[in-house]
Image (tube, rainbow, N blue to C red; front, side, top):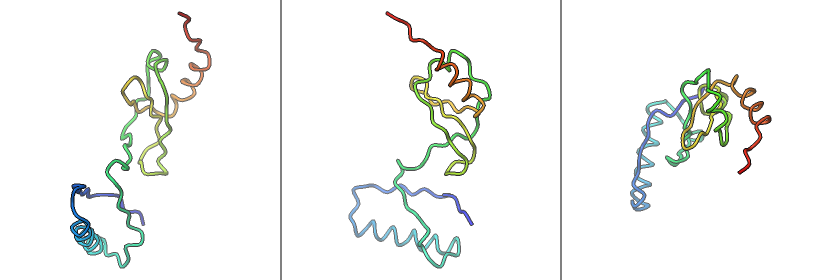
Length: 118
């Protein structure tokens, strides 16, 4: 039975160890009560910057000019943390979530693209 993260707790990193342990104890007690857990063995606490940034929807069509501008791409799989399959295109300083069917077109464009000489 998979349970997704439904609560985020932001903790100031300047707190003392005893205060952090007290907060952790309260969070564990809450999780045990809320989800009827007998053990906390499968509960993970992760830093906020380690939480994945998932695509929630995808664009089915990406313009050719945008595909030429892709600096890198990543594959998002729904078998992991995220709920849908996607290709995450990095264009300038933006991330564009695209349908997986865009990937063959991107690879073909990148393969045939010759950089302009100065």
